[in-house]
Length: 406
Image (cartoon, rainbow, N blue to C red):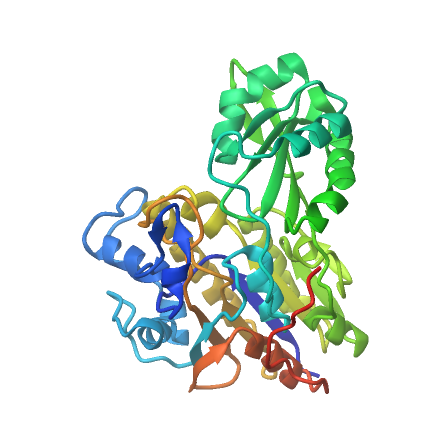
């Protein structure tokens, strides 16, 4: 029986979204943003040589068709990514109204998002007074720290010492529909932080906030603070069944790698495997080797986005892409004859762009296991249909938007 591996290369966009002018980073529209193209150009021009050298080198992804998909999406040729594809490739356009993590993943799983998430204004303070009162009451503190748009690593560096001295949690947001709460694992307590996030989540979800994220950290002011691996996302549950539900209901094992379990609030998921991207790659390799027949493995590699896209680190992003390409090449050689591996993305995050937020872009869809071929320009939800077809699961295929709001 066939197996399917659906891998999201978080934020690896390829430009060309026809509605990019309606999406913004600050006051600048996303028109012309192109994560992969601009990284490849920077590498070719010698502008991304921190930790690496020369043109962007992605032989395995290029062989699958990532350069051809980029050309289809935006009619541009990326330097050193122009080899003839040997896989089945295409470009996907998002119909959901956001350029965020839940919208992209839910639509890849067959559920386009036709409502607007709630975003907090890019000003200080970011949260309204009534929400701050709720935060204080829930945390049993007279004040909170932060109350701004911020980088998670920068805000704990700035406010970590004061947090440890006062015990007041750090609340912040970003260009996503999110409330993030940072607290020291030992001084504030990990369990206390998780309970705080769990308590606030229902109210924030009703407001249309997509995620509440617990951001535990450790360390000391004299040696520096650092985020731990115990992050926890409290996401809105999909309002309707999605790909994971359909596959699980058909009797197939569903294994989530990375933050997939959080994104889908564990809907239709049997097992979750977490860790850094390097750990996740080991999990993926093990699943390719040992997952049972009929399994569906859904993975997200987030560090392209979280460590390099949001921080506008072109060299770091290029290094991550080249590491991923090398590792995925080793895994591709282990696929069984009837396996299907789909590599795609959920949005863009152009590290050469203004601001620090996601960018509205088309994404690649690369398939190993179908032979050479062209998918053309498809929709995100067509990826779900490909998974269902390969697993021979009968289901009414998703074609349009769902208007029900969570």
